[in-house]
Length: 250
Image (cartoon, helix red, strand yellow):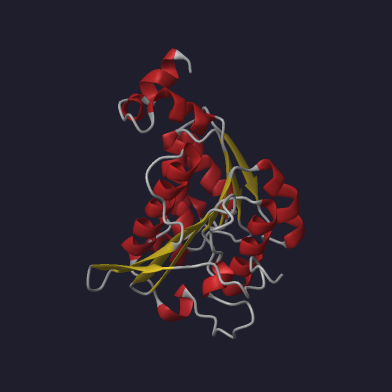
């Protein structure tokens, strides 16, 4: 690190769990963030501020007025622009020393196959079941750690699937791809503005823990946050031996 970096990240360097070695890990890391909406708007700025050297944003949507109630990476002037380009500008304004890639596409299997060999960790900040399953399977195949978050109405969920470990469950262990879930969205159900900030910030914190390698990330656990009652619960998740993605029989 140069003198400017030592000053910029000095508050991290004071933490013995991070120190110079941990910060250098972040500077050498590449994180893929899929979804530049509410969750991504909270997670990406903290990762950029913390010094993750390379961030790739993937999202095919454009910024709409209804997004501005919660998607803090975008502004009034961003309406009509690509979310990833708007996000890139915001992240570069926070930390211009980083490399920010903006990919205005859907997260398809082909795109993930292209990107995952180059990344150290993935954040799933999407809002639909099929895409979550696609991301989960691709991360498992490439042994890429996955930080998964979701938020709707007043309820948020957060978990970490670290596929570098053979003991880690996957998203499909908990939510089978074969099950039929009714797709719900913020547009039809509504969402409490700070909820995505809370879950997205937690995703960033989990990502930093996994990248640096300290503490106890939420591997094998799912955190449930209810903003209506200000209540946090946690459930244990085990690898399902019959899981279509990671089970021992497949």
